[in-house]
Image (cartoon, rainbow, N blue to C red):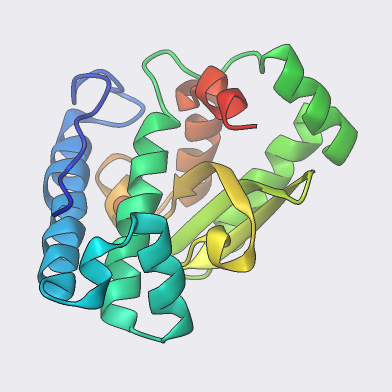
Length: 194
Ligand SMILES: [Fe+2]
C-alpha cells in the first residue's frame, strides 16, 4: 500500500508563490487520489509486490493505462514536492552549476529552455531536467508521463497541470513557471540527485 508522503514544509510555507489553498488541494486531494486509485488498481495483482518505479515501467510496457497514470503521477509528485522549499530559487550550487554550464552553455539558457518546455507542453503535463546517460537534458511530457520510461533520470520536475497553478496564477502559466524557477526550487536537493 502506498501512502501520501508528508511535505517537508507547512502548506502555508510557499505562499504567496504557491498558496496554502493550492497545496491543500494539490497535495491533500489530487496527490492522495492518485495514491488511492493506484492502491485500488494493484490490489491482489502481480503489481502489488513491485517497487513504484517497476510498476511504472511494467504498466507502461503492458499499456495498463489506469495503473501507469496513477503510479507515474505518484512518483512525479513525490519529486515535485521535494524540488521546492520556502525561499527557494537563487544561486545554483557549484557542482550542479558547472554541469548545467557544460550541457546548456549557461544557467540563463537552461532557465529559458526549462520554462519554454513548460509553456510549450500543450494541455496537462510536466517539464523536466533529467540525466540522459551522463548529460543533462530538458524535456516535457503529457499528462502523467515520466522520463524514466525513456531511460532518463529526472532530477527536477515542474507540474504544469492547471491544478498546480490556476488558483494562484489563473491562465498565466509562464508567470507560474518563472516564479517556480526563481523562488521555489530547492537547488541543493536537485544537486543531490546528480
Ligand atoms: Fe499535480
